[in-house]
Image (cartoon, rainbow, N blue to C red; front, side, top):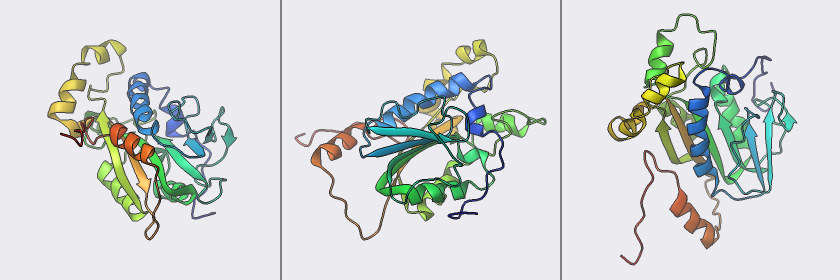
Amino acid sequence: MQNGALKYNGGRSIAFRVALYPQGAYVLDWELDQFDSAVDDVFGFRAVQVGLPEVDFLRQNRISYRFSLALEQGAALAADPLQLPLASQSVDLVALPHVLEGHHNPHHVLREVERVLMPEGQIVISGFNTTSLWRLRQAFTFHRNGAPWDAKFIGLLRLREWLRVLGFELNGGKFGCYAPPFSDKTWLQRFAFMEKAGSRWWPLTGGVYVVRAVKRVHGMRIVTPAWRQERARRRQLAPVSQRSHKSHHE
């Protein structure tokens, strides 16, 4: 154990295998759109993506020094997510696409992220929703030998509590992927109408969520440039749908 992190067991992470299962493209396409919205107004000096190095979840972020970190082949930095080889308070943005679900103690991963993040740094997390058709299928899947059915889904309420304990504050998020988890692409397309219907009528039952949180440090006041405040105000992720902001002159 180092820095409060447990030793990684050497297996493929859920983040790596999520791209391989039949519904992977459906999930990843939606998640990429959400990550694009979540990271494009985060500024600083360093940004890191932990896990799934084959997909660039930071592609819309304009921090000049961005890199991926994982044990899978293709990462810029080969390292254990439970023992990040990064200095404390050295990173402004961390992306965690399905990383927490692949570890028996995901809270330790979050502790490591909190350690390396700067004050007011941002974290963007994706995960499978426990109140969804995806979780229902998982419950009735007897041979869980493939992703994502062998993962331990983490409910958003539980994740929010972990983040709160570590000093994070949620500042945006969204549910998506409301279609049943069919393995056939044709059936997924036939149920595409459920995306709009789901976000309107049962918004908390999407198969996947993406949330963003900011690291708060009590007693520290960060002076933020006015242009950053204005951009963050306009582009912030909304809990269910994009918030609309009225002009101050109205």
